[in-house]
Image (tube, each protein chain N blue to C red):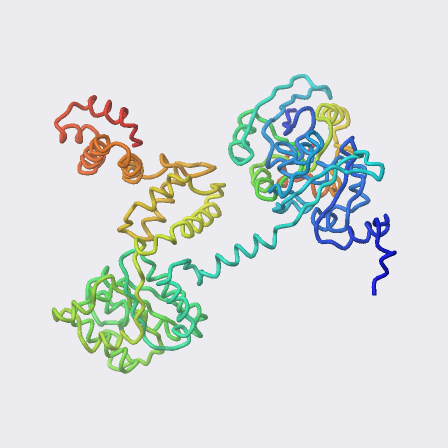
Length: 447
Length: 125
């Protein structure tokens, strides 16, 4: 039973014990803005000991972005009322920015006289960290996504990586097929062995065969010495064959043999060589269509189509754009030593209304383009390539004024047809160059 | 020599990352001979670095500063004296006469070794 006689105003000692036991930082100041008390949590969050803090001006210890611009304690002292949960950050003794929320009120003694102010602040680093971790939950290796289609792939990726079966990755150009193949390799037991990517569409048949299978000295006129092929070099690792749909029927036969027998014959060799590789093939074409046209061998199709992963185009996973933009900005900031903080809302709107036929690669190139024109701060519309800033002009205006919108579209289309040459576009529209310039200015188009 | 200080009224701005005004002073024979003020955007440290380079200012004195801009400033061969506090003019006067920053002008929890940063072979005061 609690003895009710013991319940009453808190003693100074009890208050001290409570202040020392809570996890929120608390400090008090007098009318000279000098710190008069500083609890244990305040020491921990700021990295400054109580001994060093007491007697110092609060801004020398607290070091918040609010001190100079919007000090809640100052407002409390001036207006006599408390302020709850003002957000900001402090810089601790290790030069780290610590996100905080702060609440302030007047400090009143037992005679009800105001003797200063009190500030309590809460460290939000953990919340921030959890927020970041939550966003990285949708990240596998270098692939980041929040879309359901990609999350399904992420879920099965560990099992796919564990197996040695061939994988077929389908997806439009720029959707990240090679990145996915690399992720599978890096998560597999083969990760310490080579990952070799070959673009089958870029090489003619004979070159592709000598590249993959290698050749022996004297196999052809310029074969001065033995050259091992990629199948030999990648032994124990993974070979990524991009654009497999572009290979000839003859090459498909040779490839089928490697897949079936795990053997290959270098050009000019008399004996077959064994190989231990995993094959990941990719295509931006519909292999089933190629089968029906007899352009792709059925037996090879079934050999490589053991596990099929289909990467959605970016226009089907638009929710990933902010994540991808953040990732590219972080990467390019680090690579170029810049300090770009993000993208303007209008830029995001322009991105969301763009189709991205070139998919993620196109988005990355757009960000790279913006990095050339934007030195710091936020990427704005005028930092984007012309076709995007023009398109955003249309989308912004189309709801307001259909005539204006039609005029912008006419000019935009003419410019696009004429490779953004304004003189040629004016000629195309049947108007004088200066008239076009005047209209562009009048319509407020950003070129 | 020339140096720049981030200020807030007549004080050194407590946080570089939220400061907005720069006081530029020229010191000759241990006396301040010229003062001027300019504004800057702390979110664009590279612009500030360009301004300092253009004005041939090799030293920046400021209050608390976070790692990112601090590293960028030091990387660009500017001597950074951070976590400094107090009245800006008193500090400069003291600095001009004694060529060092006394402990009373340093924020709590700061050592000279930690708060004075520059690239090797940079200017020595």
